[in-house]
Length: 113
Image (cartoon, rainbow, N blue to C red; front, side, top):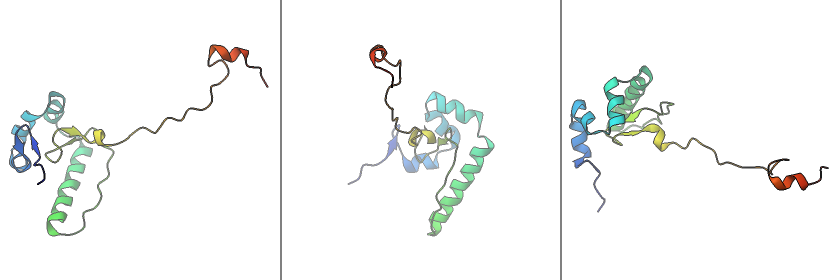
């Protein structure tokens, strides 16, 4: 039996039906402030694309992959109160080369070629 998703004691269905004003009150302060200030034009455009994808999903057709650079966009009831950027790896693995001349105290004793 799969575990049911809840956020602050509310199920996913309850969160979806909840008015936006009540949902905003459930969020942590940083996200709440961001939501109260409103969405940027890029964020509004992304929300429209999400709504369009949900309509396509209800009709049974293939849902397109949504790509965006809006890492500061708060994910609404689907992932409740997180930012998109929290789910994206943004840094590459660091690959250090060999230490250069003067990198350590002992490197002064290494003869130059």
